[in-house]
Length: 256
Image (cartoon, rainbow, N blue to C red; front, side, top):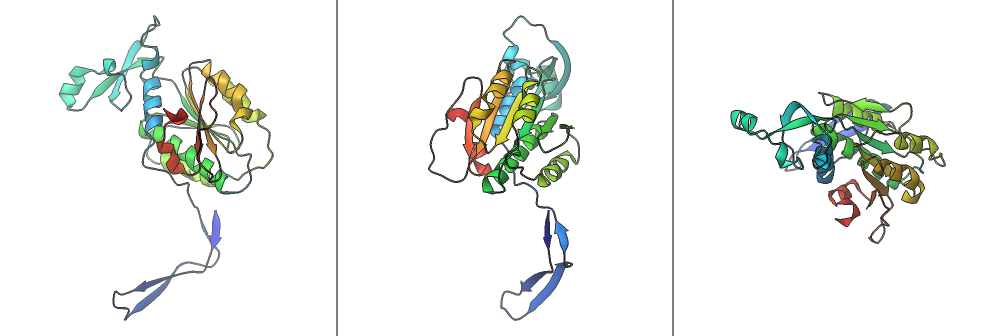
C-alpha cells in the first residue's frame, strides 16, 4: 500500500502543440501495488497436474475411484484421457481419481526478511505459483502472510484476492522458522508444496524433507539479491531454485 499525491498526468499531442494536465488522484490517495506475476509457471502446472491426476501412483496397487472429468492440462498422464468425452466435446478430457485428485497445493511464504528487493521477489514468486495453480482450476492454500492459512478455490475474483492479500504482506526480520515449519510438516501426503524464502534453504531442511516423505513434490524458491549465477545446493527430498526476479521461475528447479 502506497500513499501518493497529488499525482499529475500530462498528455502531449505528437507535434507538441498542446498539453493537457489532469490529476488522477487526490493528495494522499492510497494505491495498492500488487505482486508481479508471469503469464505461467510451466513446472508448477506439470507438478500440480501430475498429483491431481494421481499419475505419481498409477503403477501401485492402490485402488482409485473415478469421480469426475476435467479438461486435459500439460503434465496429465495420457492413460487417464477419456476418449468418449474428448470426441464428444472436441477437447481432451481426463478422468479424475479419488485420492490423487484431492491432493492439495500449498504455497508457503517466509516473511522473516529485511525490507528489500529479495523479499519483494519472494512475494512475487509466491503469487505466481498460487495463480498458476488456480489457472488449473484447482484450489491452493496460502500460508505465512500472518493469521491462519487461507484456502482459495478457483472462482471469479480468486486471483485478485490472492494478489490483494500478498500486497499487504510486510517483512518481519528475525522471525522464527518454527511456526511455518510446523505447518509445512503437517501437510497431507501427495501435496504440491512450494516455499518462497529469502533465508538459507538449509534452515528449512527438516520440514521440507518431512514433506517429501509423504510423496509430496517440494520446491524451495530461494530469493536472493542479484549475484553471479551458480547452481544452488540441492537436498534429498526437495529441490531448490535460486531466484533474483520472478522471471527466473521459468527455469526448472534443480536444473532439470
